[in-house]
Image (cartoon, rainbow, N blue to C red):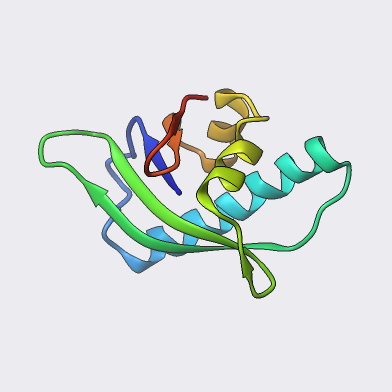
Amino acid sequence: VSVLLQFVGAADDPRSCRFSQMMEQRLEKVFSEAEIKVFKATSRLFVQMLSVSKATGSPAVTLVYTVRNGTIFLNGTTASNLLGHLSAELVGYFLFYPPLIVAERKLQIYV
């Protein structure tokens, strides 16, 4: 699953381990909020950042990550659909950066 952030603050380095860890934690909070909204309960979903990239000359940052529940990985469609129940504003609130696109690799879902 990937998220495209509109921009990241100048003080944050998207290439740092600290940034990746911070985004993993924030995405876990987003998924927790989505579970509460959809299922009225929450399981412990874990996010693992696979890559963080920023195009030269662009403020946009792309996060590519996996989501798992224990030892079972959620497929991209399931994870994207879960986040699709939240508004872009709410996702941005938890991530601290406004998202432009929340997408599965082959199917883009705009929030």
